[in-house]
Image (cartoon, rainbow, N blue to C red):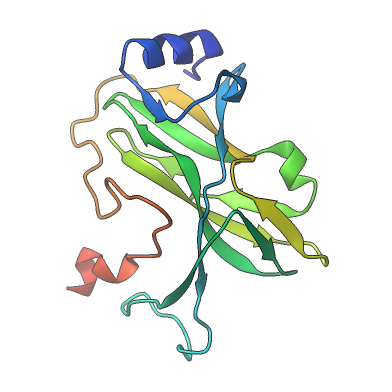
Length: 178
């Protein structure tokens, strides 16, 4: 079941769901808009001949109130908000339609597991032929919350739990690499 604005507000008020900071304007009829943080990562293309699933990826960090994504380029960013989901709630990360109409694809593997807490790292791709300038504190994506039929037996406790700022891939830490 997708949560309504009414249910989201109730869960926020009673502390079941945490989104911090949060302004009333961010709460939509069936989602919560998330704002862009000021921390960005781009792959350091000059230090790597290629990327693999078994080796650590090297990134260049950019901190600032705005960033320009060149055409056909990929960038990691973060939400301004820190969230904490209860063990019976999951969330989908969706781009805002107004941003998508500019050719900016926004994702986070699309899914936030029950029990997750932290800032959400976003994967941004400029599919346009023009650069796109982004500014921190602007609404960039939205979280759509879905109530699960039961509490998760094994809520999220993985390698991204509690993350702050933008976090690059940790796929090299996967158990099949050990």
